[in-house]
Image (cartoon, rainbow, N blue to C red; front, side, top):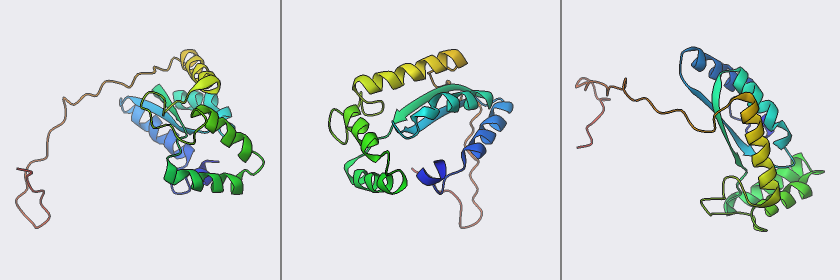
Length: 163
């Protein structure tokens, strides 16, 4: 499924390995499950969270598939080609999540959806996070060790000042 949805992205096992290496180095790791597509990949929610936790994640979030107008037709075509037996059900649930529209641009609901199915996804996510002891908050960003690079006046590729 990952290869069909994101053919040029890193494979899930490679992402998990990277998470594990970062966590082993003491870097806080979070997992962002996206896009969660009801009826297509939502059945993997709990197992994805568990695998991420086993590879060092300490927090998690998710977002439901968004279909801005320019993407909706592409997704429908992709779905019809790759999962024709599920296409009608997936689109029906997506419309339900968006208040019977293809897209919801509203800030409060566009990432997780509205209605019964959105509530079920949220409950599943929260229960899994509680069981796995995954925080729903991102770790605090520590910038104390950041130092801007020293200016390098040599060579034509030096970074110019903004001011």
